[in-house]
Image 1 (cartoon, rainbow, N blue to C red):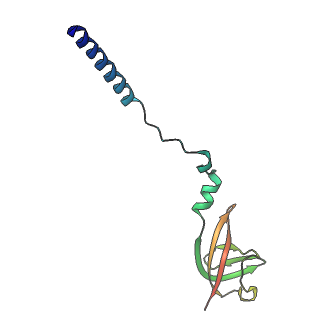
Image 2 (image 1 turned 30 degrees about the vertical axis):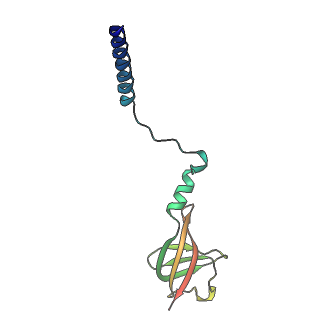
Image 3 (image 1 turned 90 degrees about the vertical axis):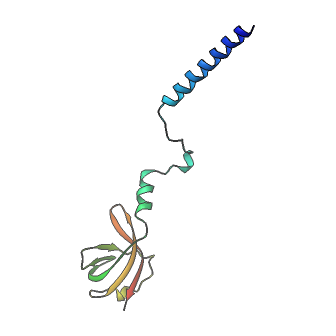
Length: 113
């Protein structure tokens, strides 16, 4: 009886070690995230480029497009509260913008000095 119990324990111990070894050799994967947490690539790119800042001197103004002396072009939508009369060549500005479809779109503009 004791011999049978010892054999049974040895078999169970061997089986558990085999299963543990097999599990340890399995490749590890990242835990799955719920679908609501996943963001499309375009949203990730947008969030990476939100809230960027630029400062400089205005070189040219054409419609709602302002070009700074360093070549930076900003589109200033009508929703941005800034005096259009002050947006003129030579004016110093500080602006925050987001990139949308490869274009820098101002979210805020301040005239300096």
